[in-house]
Length: 122
Image (cartoon, rainbow, N blue to C red; front, side):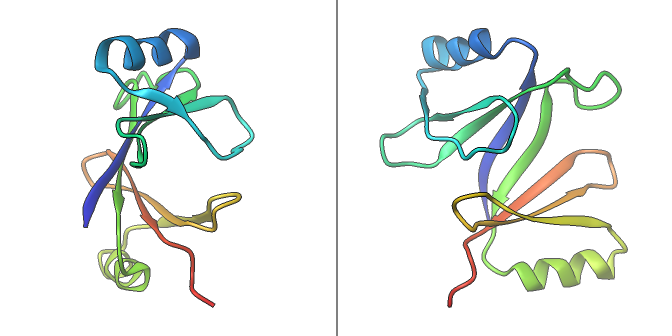
């Protein structure tokens, strides 16, 4: 398992993109059409998007502007078995246009976790 990306929510997309570009040194790049405004920021030319930005009002009761932490996984079935064993509810999704599979769930301490898996072969 490895860290995949962080997800930041903001009400000011332009200013947030500018911060990650101008201050951190990331660049704006391709983002699938999720049906709501946002941006994906990249650190390396051919690397993965490491900061995902979504336009929304930040959560005032929990993690604030840090919406979730995402990991890149290798065995979706093993993860869902572990989640079931720990009685942790999860939501499974597929990324539009890529076929990547995602599992979202909340850690017992309140942080939202996303784990991404490559599309099913075949």
